[in-house]
Image (cartoon, rainbow, N blue to C red; front, side, top):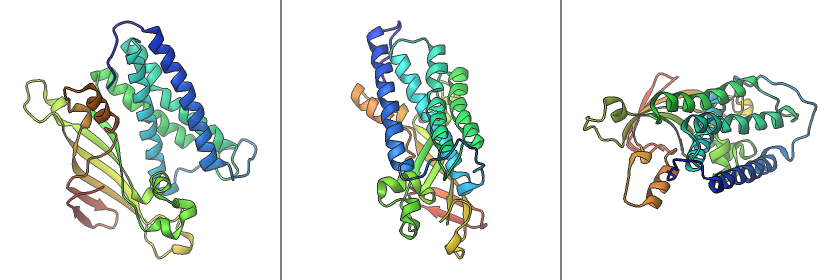
Length: 275
């Protein structure tokens, strides 16, 4: 990650503030163009979407809040801000960003402000903050993996028309993970590999609509639970600061390794490499 300062570096702090302001504006503009531009506006309203997409979208909200908070924390520490202030101010950055998205939803005729989303956004930020306060590190990382599915061809307008859109919209191909670093719980004297994690994942399949499959009722919706090993890229240290930064930047991705799947259809599957 970034090299950290012992005292506040005003130049760096100004850089962080400007970068976050520009990043926030760009993110909101891009999101509006992708999601809201062609959707009619409405008066502000609420919407209960807790049963949509077998809760895959909810988990995605939490993971996003977690990592935006993680980035906010690292940026403030790089600026020399104290640990406690970095945790609280940086760690809640994701909650702030995603609450803005909820406001967009509240004025959209196709969606609405969701208290369920706010709850998982808060949980994602809280998960980062709680670990940082308790251990001064993230022993359990939230991670993401993706594989393309056949469903986007059936409903490209809903699930995405290309790979970039699929990665964001096609919940059938997304898997979210809790990746626990075993060595960090065993103490400094342990010789257990510091980069090796055990990961527990959740996914879903057969979803061609938010609540049901409409014209594709023959396609069965199912929940999927995964058990796998993982590589914690953030704990692999090299002599190159640049290489360490790159490894840290991709630390949110689940490393493809042998995986066991258990699903709601009471079947078990094994994958030599699961993406």
